[in-house]
Image (cartoon, rainbow, N blue to C red; front, side, top):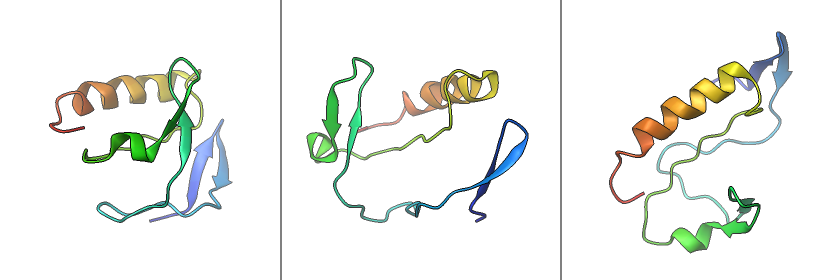
Length: 78
């Protein structure tokens, strides 16, 4: 898998390591839609599905997130 993505028509190298499906990952903190901290341990016992995208305010990313949420919403135990 390539470590480059395209952003605004320009290639951008992703420096971070992205986990593989089924791989255990270290604890991390994100924010939810109300900007409250959410940790990985809050979802213990559930499957975790990560959707990582550059910017929700672009038409392509927004469409991608909508499509992802539609499919992910049907998944069990997430």
